[in-house]
Length: 311
Image 1 (tube, rainbow, N blue to C red):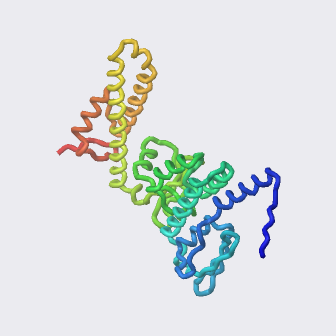
Image 2 (image 1 turned 30 degrees about the horizontal axis):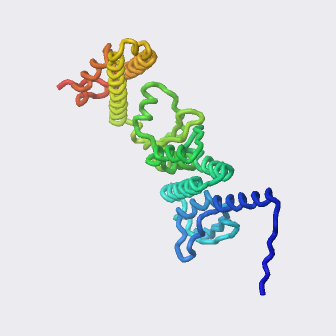
Image 3 (image 1 turned 90 degrees about the vertical axis):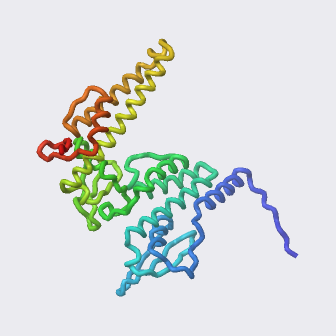
């Protein structure tokens, strides 16, 4: 006959054991890999991010013995080195680790657990966040929705970076804004740069930053974006005018909004002047000019801005 004894612990110890159990459940990793499945390069990078410890030993034939400590247990696999170090495997391993921690964060039921998971997320994403501070599942999710399409492994940063659209690079060049180039061309053909000392790492194909064609395309895209910004500011101005027209007393309360809108339009029109060498006094004039000439623009190297190409 089996006899069970009941042990009565003081309440404070019972609570401590309860939260210890919660911590283990929330920080415990997903189940170890099925030994029958091949160990891939993506697996290697995933466990490099989430395992407590990883040890590797490379043989003369290029085979790598991988051991990792996971849920207080060692697991061992072999893989060829050529299958490990590829940009796609590094990226997939990063994404798997990010989603793994996000799942844990979503399930966290205690602030201490959530804080520890967020610390791991912060360490994982340090290279692509720059100095941006993120707190809470909802904000992490919003950050990822913006960056997921730009994420890429960059050899020049030895980690994840953001693949910049050409207009981001060219806007910095055209308007003489801060741009720190860390490598002119890495082994994958990327130019690597930051927007400031604590900026995320950005990469762009070096070919998109050189030559007349690339420069012209960059100028045109920056012009298009500036025109879109001016269009939005102009529409906001019209909406403010409509609101002010509903009640004479409302105009006084909207003075701050009118002043801010005027500054936005001035900034946009200044940028357009840099891009084209032209000067117009109103948003309507700029919008009319762009509509009439957007398909006939070319870059004049001599003048340093876009000009209208005449037939």
